[in-house]
Image 1: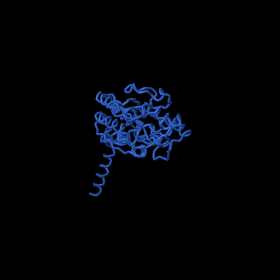
Image 2: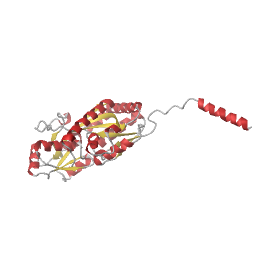
Image 3: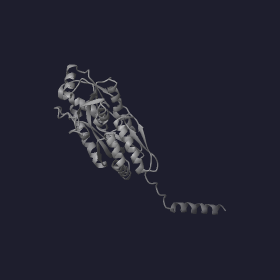
Image 4: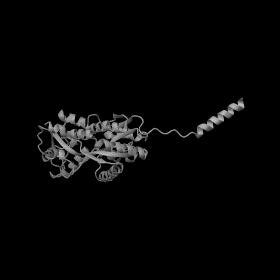
Length: 320
């Protein structure tokens, strides 16, 4: 009997070994987490949540958006960099912070820790004041900062952000001196300006456009290389004689090491979401300047920015 049981056991084991391997479930087969490295309510958060809702339809799974603001984006991006590269954790990446943070300090992530999926938005910077501000032009603002150095406060989304780098460039060009006040997100900058705790907000054009149309804020200049069509009446800083060009690209990335088929599937979902008529309508309502790049083109753009900002850091470190 013992011999028979051993023989039956051996036959059973052999049968299991010769069975075909169970097919792996197609990706994705469970919810995906999307990390936002800035506070809720800002331009990045709004764009991310809009995109996530449309991507869900294509992927067939829910996308849970979580905000991890702080340290100029480092908290959220560090969490994304440490996540398992299985396609179930993705996050929004913002320039220049995703590039500049590891340049300016010993950060808990580096650019190589990410696999770019797609860029979505390319939003020019903007210099904003309240509608009733005494500063009617960028030239007036600069002159006021020269007369009272270090007293005119401006809010940004953090040290090394496009907003901060733009104002540092303006200071170098003009000799003016402003007071930098960093926040965790553009929504907090907006609140500080509207409550008159600060006279200046430096946030992207897409983030201030609604308040401008409602007569609450007034842009003194936009900081793109040319005028954004949604704000065609606003001159660029270059047109006004100040050679300052800055903006923020906002895209999606996964942790480095994610398998290429999964990366391509996510990129496909982003592309389809951006092409969705509902998303297009919402993006227009939210004043999102769209510029879609696939994984390879997005990576190339990020690497070019990295080289640019490393050169800038060597000449003009931007630490406070």
